[in-house]
Length: 404
Image 1 (spheres, helix red, strand yellow):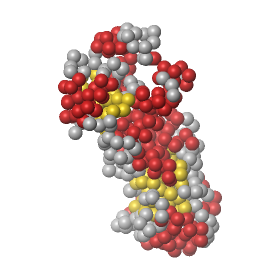
Image 2 (cartoon, one colour):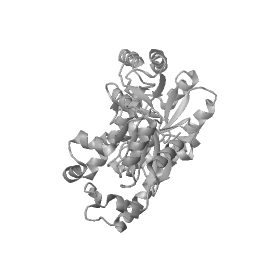
Image 3 (cartoon, one colour):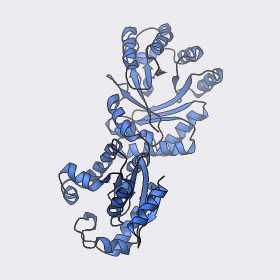
Image 4 (cartoon, one colour):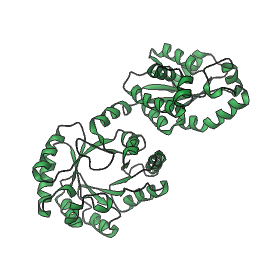
């Protein structure tokens, strides 16, 4: 699912607020959030100004948010009556969404939902942690709580301390989406480390990503034009055929046959990376390490989204990364080619371009490595094809039949 892009209005006065709103009306985004806690006017000015903002942004949807200091808002916002302001916004029923912090007062939140259950304005039940990343179970629990409290959307933002924290957030998002597929979610990891969640959260189930067109309203917000550039590549629909599997299963040979039969261009990911890096795969492993190479593989998938429908022969480790799996599944069919370890050995035993097998060129090591990778390959695959003792043309025809 392609996430909607939301941009914040963070202005202290009416003139600047409306100036930002009019600017955003001309940008290729879907949502605008007015952060009321930045506004230095009086309480009675909020509703009239919110209506002006709603008119100024044109066809875009408006989110009105009064973020508290406790959850990362401006100190200035503490002057306003939080629940009274939400009550007025829902009573007037012109904004697309209002943001309500679920940890602030559950009883008042439920009373608010009961009182305005018939309005069109939707409630985003939000939770923010600017210090840490909750556990996966806790993230799911908080999003579930937003749903139980009657919110129309669940939102959670947290601060990662490492890349593993970002993976925790994304995994929790995917599991919550599987558990409650009809409940809209907005999730993000903040700060520089959280960039992956803002660009690729849609692959896990997050439906909105907050960017910026100037001043950011939270740490780590990405310029909207960069977000759109990535979204235009990743969320383009299924058009490629990706061939994955252990080295030696026949990806290169089958790719050539598929390209011939389908009249689609053929791409070998290892060759692409070697050309871009100006080094062979063994040289990249030796000079920059495997982690660098895996990042290059992931970045390459973004570029494939901008190109024509192709037959893509993937390196043996492409499907070891969860993000890569989700990118490939978004961009096309993922075909897992399999073969017995003995078959693999016979096909690769004379190869000098297999860095992972250096010093381990034997059937037992191949079997052990294949077994470690099997769960990842099977998780990624939308189609599985056995290649032992089969003609290339038969394999390619089966792939084309199963990829439509």
